[in-house]
Length: 168
Image 1 (tube, helix red, strand yellow):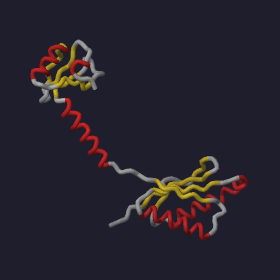
Image 2 (cartoon, one colour; image 1 turned 90 degrees about the horizontal axis):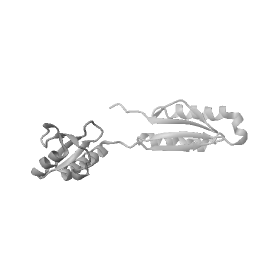
Image 3 (cartoon, one colour; image 1 turned 90 degrees about the vertical axis):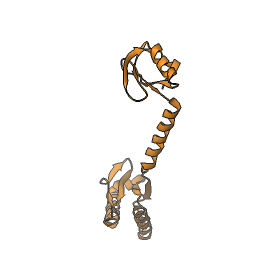
């Protein structure tokens, strides 16, 4: 953002500090108007023909802008994705442990990415991995639902589970 002497054009569309348009004026006259009010001349829209400049207190303007940015960050919600990695030859106890972890993450409101990695000859039996994923989806149906159906990404089958909204 250019201010005062940094503005290098002949004419600008000038907007007063209270928002009224003063029209297209010479840059020198615009600087004089800003100086007479002890304010800054700020280039608001440099791409317009002619560029739009506003007479305002630049320090106050930057402060309010940063305040707006901080306020918008407060209202943002960060989505955290937890990942559970499985193998096609998983035993029942290990499966139950991973299932409990998945349900716990979903109940806390996290998204859960479930991936089953295949090595070597296991690629010949991808149906086993798909069955495990379908079983997990069925077992966590009360806590979460799949965002998309399981799909292959190289040697890995992946799906993402999102928490189910609870009825009050």
